[in-house]
Amino acid sequence: MRELLAQYRAVLDELTARELIRTNNAPVGDLAEQCALTVYGGTLAKNSTASYDLTTPAGLRVQVKARQIAVQKHRSVPFSPMRSLDLDLCLFMLIEGDHVVRAQEWMVADIEAHRVPRPKRNDYIVKTGQVLSNDVGTDRTADVQAAWVSLLDSRADLQPRPPANPSPFGK
Image (cartoon, rainbow, N blue to C red; front, side, top):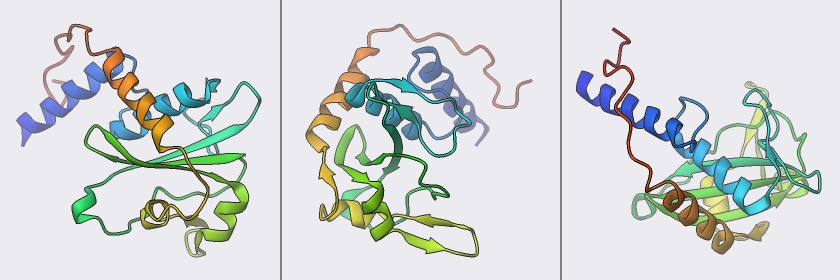
């Protein structure tokens, strides 16, 4: 188990060095934000910004929600919760391996109409099945997949760096 954690730490360090991720969270979220930045342009919000992840050149505030799924075994699961709709649109991304299975752009009205409230937690969710159904919002899968491939390939030629600290426990 220690070896797996050390390998995971090394992967996070390398993705950070290649400027593909900004946090130590599961990398798919940070990669999705970078992908959305390629699609929409603009600037990424500070990591602590709660309601949106980037601002487009036109001033639109975009929230990015991404889930890694296995389509063959898929059951509808929630994206990370939302507490505020202080945004203009949300890009929901479903990723399987290195492929964007679906990317749907929802406006605030779409979220309001289809969200599942969780009053005890003071938040609400959207489920992956709602995005897979393709009944809501605008399908952006082709644009997002092209950006995803470009993003993953753009830094592939960088040489890996040796880990700064090979121990998963910082010793």
